[in-house]
Structures are given as structure tokens and as C-alpha cells.
Length: 310
Ligand SMILES: Cc1cc2nc3c(=O)[nH]c(=O)nc-3n(C[C@H](O)[C@H](O)[C@H](O)COP(=O)(O)OP(=O)(O)OC[C@H]3O[C@@H](n4cnc5c(N)ncnc54)[C@H](O)[C@@H]3O)c2cc1C
Image 1 (tube, rainbow, N blue to C red):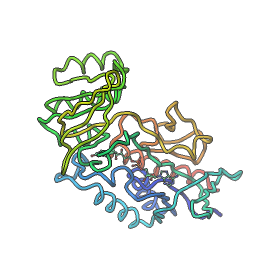
Image 2 (cartoon, rainbow, N blue to C red):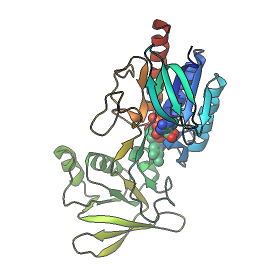
Image 3 (cartoon, rainbow, N blue to C red):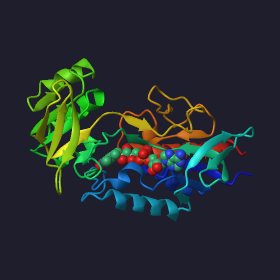
Image 4 (cartoon, rainbow, N blue to C red):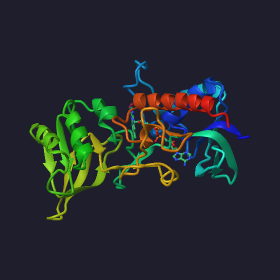
């Protein structure tokens, strides 16, 4: 007999939302979280757009509330323990090799390992993470009204998110290492016709400068090798995302970026193996969406286990 009805890999918002539902459905639930609960949102200074929290909430408090909620319904959450390998067994159950050297078994698995943003790795970036350095315009754009900001990147994300920022910022300095944007034509046209947008081509950001808040960026022109300091209050980086799909890549279908492919029920192609949230190909990467994904995965697990009594 398996140790658990379901093992949820990842203790971010997706995994914890799933755990609230599987726990409440009286399924024996284990959540594995290799770092700290809350995932990406745990380090965010303020969440202002999660419905129902009219005064906003810090990422840390949000994560801790979520943890309590999952535990209240009996989910066991192992923080600091990762899943290293997923082994589907012949009888339809799963064995998971854990980072502490043990094995846990379950009747179903939800993959909720999320993703992480590519970063610039430059001085000042860590210092202002979540406080002026952002990877999400929808999340943080509204904090920077009528001030100049920087956008880094030139693909679809940079252009779409940069366009969103034109609602708030007084000026968008879009730094890109090439001499043109590589986004869809229609997006580029909309974006570059906005007078707030100032593309800075063939250039890279070398430093984010500021005492208590972001004050400026130092930018190097790759053709002339000259540097200039541009005053900005925030830096939005859109140079790509890396899904944490490595442990699942040989089992499930992934797209060319490594994002897991699921259907509307959060099913992968392996019976009993579900995936949800930022790890997957999704139309939107926001808390409300990933929580809904987690809930759907949990309900799908419930139905799957009802139909498969192994
Ligand atoms: C700076 C920032 C601010 C944001 N602000 C907002 C906002 O204001 N509003 C909003 O709606 N959205 C916001 N978002 C987006 C939101 O945080 C994400 O959509 C959400 O966190 C995704 O949840 P997830 O659980 O799918 O993935 P993640 O949050 O990425 O969580 C995945 C978890 O899985 C763990 N994990 C990975 N691999 C393993 C493994 N092998 N074993 C065990 N554990 C593993 C990771 O450590 C991580 O904790 C923000 C994102 C960022 C980066």
C-alpha cells in the first residue's frame, strides 16, 4: 500500500492550493518543498491584486496563511525536502526519491514545481529584488506611477509587459542587446508608437544604483563601449523564465521551453500524474490563475483515485 494518496511536489501557491483541497477531501497528502513555502511570491514585498485582500498582503504573510490552511486540513508539508526523481511503478502508483535519501510512495502525484526568472546577475539586482527590481509588470507596475522605469529585453514578454507599463510610468527606457525587438509585429507597433517608450539598442544594464530605493541604472552601449547613467525608479527584467521541470521531462510532454503540457483537467499524458501552475504552459501567470490550477488538479486527483482503487 502506498504511503500517501497524493504527493504534491512544490509548496508554492499552486501546490498549497491543491493541498487545501486534497486534504479537505480526506486524501492523505504530502507536500514536498525543496526551499521554502510560498515559492516565487514568498519574497514579494506586497501583493496588491489578489482578490479579497483589499489592503494588500506581504508575500511572506500570504505564504504562511496558505501553509496554515493546508495544514489545517491535514496535509503534511515537508519544507527543505525536494523530490529528486519520480518513478512510476507497474501497479500505477509512484515512488518518489527525496533529497533526504528516503523514498515516499503515492497513488497520484501533482507536479507544482513552478519556474524562476532568468536574472541579469548584476550589482544592485539582489538588493532591490521585490523592491524596485521586478519580473512581473502586472504585479508591480502600479507601484510605479508617473516615474521613469527601465524594461530589459526585446521579446514578446518584454514588449507586452512594457506596453502594460505605459499605463503607469512616465517613461519606459527599454534596454535591449540587439538593434530591434523580436516580438510579434503587431505588439512592436503598438509599443513603439507610444511616446513614453524609449528603446535603447545594442546595450546592456551593468548596475542598478540606489541607496534605499532604485535611483538609476548604468547602461553600456555594446558598439561604442560607452556607459551612461539613466535615472529610473524600477527595473523590469524580461529575459526569459526557466521552468523547474527537469525531474519530469522524461515522463511528460514539455514544450520547447521545458514547460509541461496539460489539458484543462491538469492531466499529463501519464495516468495519475497531474501538473499545474507556473510549471505548465498557461495563458496567464498570476496567483489567482495558479490557485485555480491547483484546485483543478486536486479535484482531478480526487476523481482519478475514486476510479482507480490501487
Ligand atoms: C517578484 C514576483 C512578484 C509577483 N507578484 C505577484 C502579484 O503581486 N500577484 C500575482 O497574482 N502574481 C504575482 N507573481 C506571480 C506568482 O508569484 C506566480 O504565478 C506563482 O508564485 C506561481 O506559483 P507556483 O506554485 O506555480 O510556482 P512557484 O511559486 O514557482 O512555486 C514552486 C515551488 O516548487 C518548489 N520546487 C521546485 N522544484 C522542486 C522539487 N524538485 N521538489 C520540491 N519542491 C520543488 C520551489 O522551491 C517553489 O517553492 C509574482 C511573481 C514574482 C516573481
